Length: 295
Image (cartoon, rainbow, N blue to C red):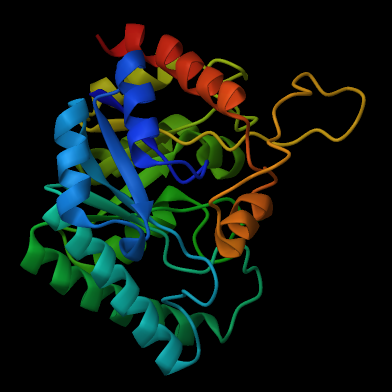
């Protein structure tokens, strides 16, 4: 196992992110799933310069991106988006994408259970065919019920993976599974060898170590099932707008270089644009919590 991180949680130059995470002992990055944002030749050079490898990416299912959409054109555009992410990761020598099938924040279905299952299976199969072509693995990621109605538990993600291919896997996120699973340990063990990726945030979605999750136990279970992939930091710190706020300086009041779509995506997660100091502290705390347990 090694420590990785996402970078979609704060808009900043990639070099800034890489410099910071290298200092704290991160080995890789799951880069934002926005192919138009990165020129792969320049990105490869930055990764090499800082000694950080690309582990993969997560699909940012914002706007009308939705593999389970009723509208065929919308599904086709969503498939093309996923293919573009897969191609980007292949060009960056990455190994994996974590695929969130439906639009984040969408909690109302477009059709019946049978209709949506066919739509999402067919679309994911098309994505998987391209993944095989470019040499990148796909891991289906379930989110909590307040972010999607479609897949909330590991066994649901496994059902889609099974419908696609025995070579399709799943990604579990500590934050989501501590909300949704009947038994967290059982969910991890059931994923077994199909667990391709594991995301890290505490039960309150702050950095690992700032909540109630027993990280020693979680990593012990991962070790038991033979998991040897990334533990990818994905804190999305909730903003407290009351006098009880423990971190009054966490919000960047004058954000720059962030698109309206990305800002909305962050705000839809209950967070905001974070100051560099607060963001850096969260990166450090996760590293200080996780690294001693996996070395």
